[in-house]
Image (cartoon, rainbow, N blue to C red; front, side, top):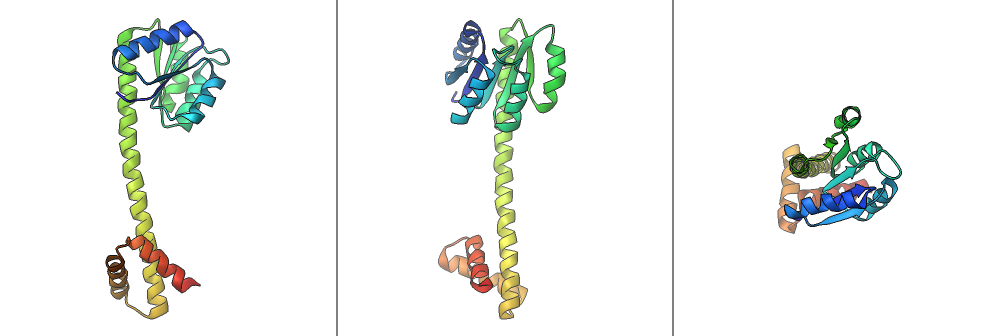
Length: 190
């Protein structure tokens, strides 16, 4: 598995235990941070698929950092909290998309949360890719429409003639319709 994981834990022993469990199941690409501020610096250098926060941290309770990571990164976040406050913390962060599990930690709970988080992360990647594809298509349609209007206005072509002109130039030049449309707009708008 090539998923990149960050474990944030004030306790080195707990971080090592978490890493040992994850490595046993094939997740070997693991980094560590001991506190919220350190983890914020680490995520500026590396893109993570999953961030596991073992709260409390040296410099925060951890739930504020968890929400920050969900809002400002593409990583899934699992927050491990003490059993006496897990419901309180869950009510604060689950609405943001943070998965909360309770201490004492059961290996099955951790593995379930990790697998679920990574599955949702993969689904989000696919949706983001589809979204980018549609944004690019929309931008192309917008440019082509604007170029057609420019051709209609500046040369007197009909809408069909302008459309055909753009398609023909794109084929002849082996360029995308977006590039041809942008060149037309640039040519006639100067």
